[in-house]
Length: 380
Image 1 (cartoon, helix red, strand yellow):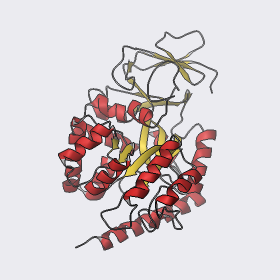
Image 2: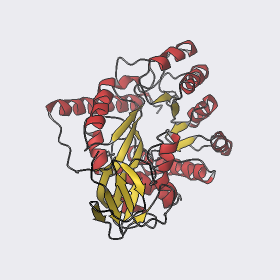
Image 3: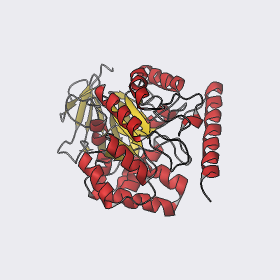
Image 4: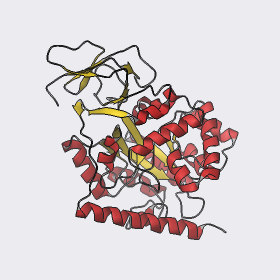
C-alpha cells in the first residue's frame, strides 16, 4: 500500500447505488476515508467535474494470459472467473497478489458438468460429476471462490440430471459458496431455479415464460445476461429475444449483474464490460442500475464485502471518468485514472511472451473446436 494519501477533488461521485452528495474522495493505506478536504502531504487529483466510480467488477470471464491486465486498463479492478484451467487460475491468483497493474480475481476453478457435457471438450481431461453421490466429493475437492454448474446445452451434450444439480448446490451452500448456474435454454433455466442456484449466467435467446420470470424473481436469483457475448455470437435477431427476456427480468425486479463472458468471439477483456453496460441501458435499465450491476450489486451477490461502493472503510478501488455516466452511460469509456487498493495503476498494452502466445493460440483452437461441434450437433 502507498504511504501517501490521495484526495480527489471537484468530483461527482457515484457511490455504487446512486449519485452521492460527495464532491471529494480521500483514501489512505488502500482504504477510503471519506468526503474530506485534502490534508497536508496528500496527493491532490482535480477531477475537473468528472465522476468517481467504484472499481468495476466483471462478473463473468474465462481466464487466459493477459486477462487481468487488459481488464484493469479499462477500469475493471476485479474479475470473476467462471471456469478456467487450474494452471491458468493459479497464475492469475499469483499475478493479482503480486502485481499492481492487473485486476484482482476470484475463480470458480473447474465447473461441475456431466461426463461428456459442456464445456468438457475445452479442457480434456475434465473432471465431471456422474450422479448425485459424487456431488459432495466434487465440491469438497474444489479449490474455488464460488461454484459453477452447467445445465444442458439444448440437448447437444449430456447434462447433469436434476438430482445431481440439486446435490451440488446443497454441497456448495453448506460450504458458504455462491452457486452460478450456466443456462442456454428455458429448460435449463427451470432446472437451475429448481436446484436453488444464486446466480443465473446468460439469458437464453428463446422466450422465457412469465411464470418462469416470476420464479426467478421470487427466488431472489441474480442474473448476469452477458448480452455482449450474445450479440457477438448469435447476431441481432436472436439477441433481440435475449434482450426482451432481460427487459422482463429487470421489470420483475431481478438483481442484474454485468459480465462479458470474455474472451468469447467478439469480446475484449475490460472494454466489453462498457459495451455490456450500454446494452443493459438499451434494454431500459437505468444507468444507475446498470452501474450497480458492475459495482455494488456484483460485490453484494458474490460476498465481496470490502469493495463495490464508495464509502468509508472500503477498499479504494476507484475509477475517475470524464463526463457523467448517470446521464450518458457511454461516459464510462472515458477513463482518466484508475486506483486498485489505493495504488494508481499504470495502463499499458498487454504484449504476450512466447509461452503466453502459445497458450492463447491453444485456447483459440479449443474454442474453434467447440463451436464446430455445436454447429455439427445442431439439428438442421
